Length: 390
Image (cartoon, rainbow, N blue to C red; front, top):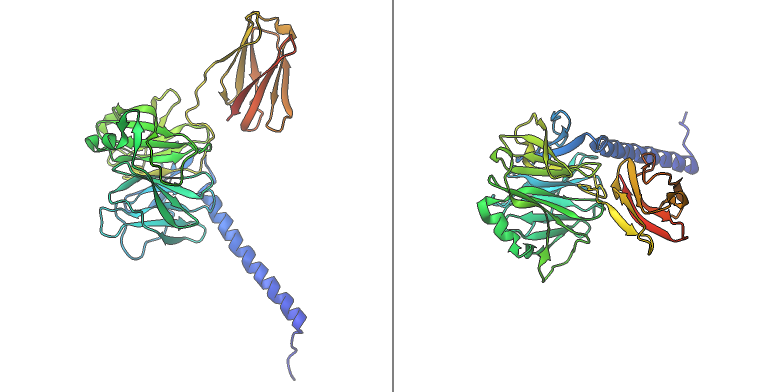
């Protein structure tokens, strides 16, 4: 007796079901693996050793988990560095082999499929220790030991020399990085597109900001850096900094190289807080995180505005805020003032009638983002101040 055969339509439907099931399985694996990489952005960052082993780091305890990447084939890793996380595809980009060896290699690691991709080689002729990814994941920036800034386009797999004319005021960054062999450090980009650049030697370190928008083509003129910490600052214990990673709230993690292996937090007042000694030697070689905060090292200036010709004034602070805003008025009939907060769509999310010369406004329940603080005075005029809620 012959077995029954499936009719063409039923066979087609079964094939479609199988294809959908396999696709769903692969997507589940992808999202599960990607999510595992960034499930705890408040407490977990990632470090890479000079042998290109990638490990999660608990920032509270300093405990280093087992490496997340498989063994390499081909050339062995050497002087691996400059790791960065891409929001676009969930991959990590870094130098598996640096130019101290004969065959430098720039790679990406995909945690979803546990695979490597070997990418176009950076044209630098000297070691690269500093690297970071743009927030949208479309580009990667690298700074070599001679202070040459390069850009790598993910879609085109090509490198561009952006500038060899980075300057701190009247001083070339090249002179700073070559003094005292200040070739260590790292970079990170925040959610506003600003590039944060840590340069370090054993006798000094410095921190710079290259303001957004960052160029992706070669620049012929000088590019001025904003000095955040003077490059003459003594690093703790005479150790070199190797890694930088941004926190959710805009603070900065800094790690020291072997054999110190310390993890610090750079506070808004630029002081260093020791968090822990990391449990794996050499893991402070380089850091990255999954965080792209809009504001880094938030400070709290008072913004004073003149309300009218009678010298009535108000102050509002901080303009970068976590929980509470302070409103202070001078020479004003405060009972006639209405204070409102608008979101970017123009919707009123908070509104108060001021009843004291100094008022505290709780905005802890607002979602993170940009808002506009609005004060309507007794003469009918309206005054606005942009604030950033962390």
